[in-house]
Image (tube, rainbow, N blue to C red):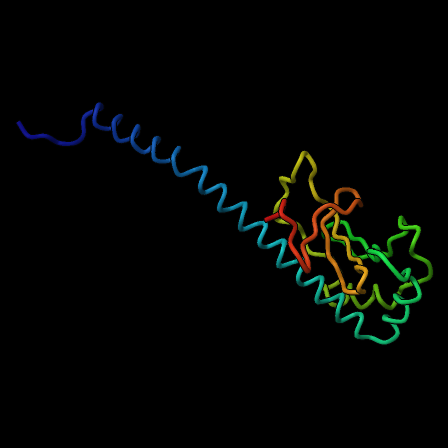
Length: 164
């Protein structure tokens, strides 16, 4: 008598082995995908930081920012819900004056809209939804991810520990 295929028991054993392998590989794959998405967000923050530096190279935009910000401390200059254009931060009591040229320059450099977030799981039950551009005490651009406008995770020039 000739054997013409697999028995049911052999198929069940192969499926069980595949299920065990999939269960072992899945968590590592998920971690890899999450790490990749966070890296994309850091690259997007670098793009925004470069756009901010380019905007500050425009003398008129630089003067607007210098008039608008206080002389010390970190200040928020612009915010954008992910995928929308940057607008002036009106929530900070430190900001005064109009920064339309600065905002035009940033939005132009970013293609008219802020990058969309790839990593949406969040941290400590907070999910980021806002790009925040500011300046530190030294006057250098800083980019954060925020939750409903609050600055939570710095991505440029330094990456905060929680986001790594």
